[in-house]
Length: 109
Length: 117
Image (cartoon, rainbow over all chains, first blue to last red):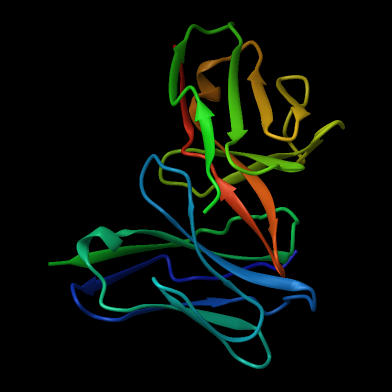
């Protein structure tokens, strides 16, 4: 099981771009990288998933270098409502997720 | 995206009683569902993997006789906390796996807050 390491917390001002990096040095060949967002007392919400290079959707981008030992979630122009905990998960498609500590993002007005 | 519901959203019970929590995939079939527990200010902890029509697989340290899981259909899994005690008070979250194209995603329910008095 690939272990992930993320910063415990981050602060950002409204309107800025936020990049959260996750390290997963022992990622396996068949593992995907998935990011979730969680608000207090709610279930995690899927943000983005990728295998390599760059993936972009309407809310975020995911950058994965060639060695896949890390990944960066990029949130463009954050707002106060983006204050949440962000989890980076690594695992084989369809398998269990083991959550790490996550990154608590606080957006400051 | 796919929707997963949980019922109830919160429950308060007396110590020694049993509580059943339902997890439903509303618009897709889920051959696999997962149950997590989350204590305040902590991360989610995987409790068990539930496969439709077969016995659940429990993570190390999770008592299978205390946390009964049933996955009788492709859209419903239940978690029963038997003889609940105050230390079982937690936020219980389920997720369901949906296959979509190349990737498989897990969709999470809104969670159930259990308080044992």
